[in-house]
Amino acid sequence: MLQQKQERGMGMNITEFAALAGVSKTAVSRYFNNGYLSAEKRAAIEEAVRRTGYSPSEAARGLRTRRTRQIGVVLPRLSGESTARVVDGISMVLGDKGYRMLLANTANRPEREVEYLDTLRQSGVDGVIFLASIFTPEHRAVLKSMHMPVVIVAQQYEGYSCVYHDDLGAARDLTNLLIRRGSHPAYIGVTAQDQAAGMARREGYVQAMRQAGLMVRTEDMCVSGFSMDDGYEQAKKLLETRHPDGIFCATDSIAIGAMRACQEKGLQVGKDVLVAGVGDSQMGRVTAVPLTSAHLHYKTSGQEAAQLLLRLMRIPGGGIRSVCLGYEIVERASTSGTCETL
Image 1 (cartoon, rainbow, N blue to C red):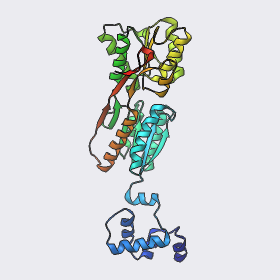
Image 2 (image 1 turned 90 degrees about the vertical axis):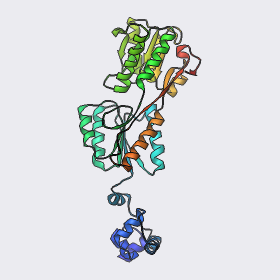
Image 3 (image 1 turned 135 degrees about the horizontal axis):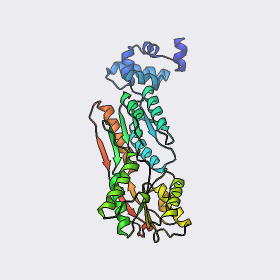
Image 4 (image 1 turned 45 degrees about the vertical axis):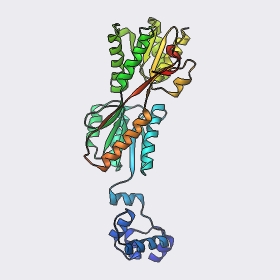
């Protein structure tokens, strides 16, 4: 039987391979995990590998090293451009280090985030990168139970390494831009449960309005979903009762929907009504009236998160680090700009 396995080079366990090579199982394990071996034992194992083609499975190697070289990535949606840019950044760093990503798409459903985090907790991945939206008590409970390093992207969460954007600053500067261009802007945002896109961007709008001495009116502020259709519907409702000369939107997708609603109302975007968003999406750059937006460094956030995770895996208990990334305001025709970075 051993002879047959030797000839096939398949189905051979480590005990059988060690016997064939004339070394101990420990020596075989050290060889395949780049440990120290004498030149004599290394040569014997290499000869046995040449004869049999033997290679331990990744699963078996993971059991010995307690590493699977797999990283779980929990993300809100696969179709989003910003998400794709973050994942691209993560992949660049992890791929160079020989890690594979396991992607979990939650379809913007917080309960699925919790389910996937719990699944990854039980799966034996080496670490988790979580593109977070909101934090519920269930999120807090499952994160507390994780026995592997976790890095959170796009949100700040106490007790965990995080990579996030200056959402408040970006929103404040965009609102200031609209005010400087002569408008008293309305606001279309998202749920305040989202600390970054919802609460921080709303606060940036409010700060800019108050600093300019303008009234912050409840009737000028709407809460939308994240899609273009959501932005369109909220802008339509806003335009039915009010005639704002500017609209600051929490995301580019919302802003693109709002521009369509303005155009249907017979308003000229960039002249009758100024519109700005956040994200600097490709779609916003090629709309009929190119969109003024805040460029957020999504790809960089993915790279930073992956590097933080690798550090935590290499140095357990190495300390919590938070990285806040900057932004650039890119003015385009939707605010009568000339496509320049301010």
